[in-house]
Length: 120
Ligand SMILES: [Zn+2]
Image (cartoon, rainbow, N blue to C red):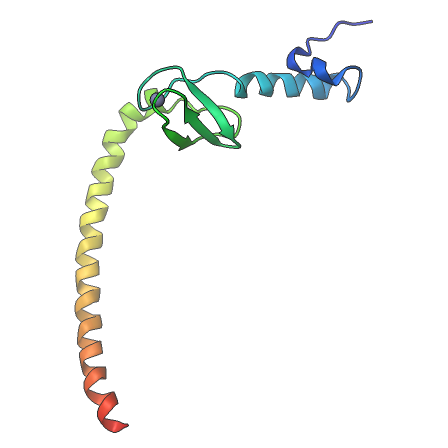
């Protein structure tokens, strides 16, 4: 009989088959691991629910992948600067368009306000 590396899937005993149990134990070991916290950098982040991770040290709660925490801290350091610049540009554009919309809306409202109540 071939030995299987079932890990935490040992609790299933002889049931459910080798392939499924190996998949389960691989994911289970990933999700039970302690991950580094993006806020305080302590390896204290545990999975609270599907995709929801909570730091035991600073109680920071954040969303990530369902069974693992994606390596955000190393990747975002490079990309954050680029995205932040883009976001700032977009925000300034949004503010301009919002101001225009407000002006048109207020002018419409003013004209509508003059017309309606006197008619009734
Ligand atoms: Zn933390």
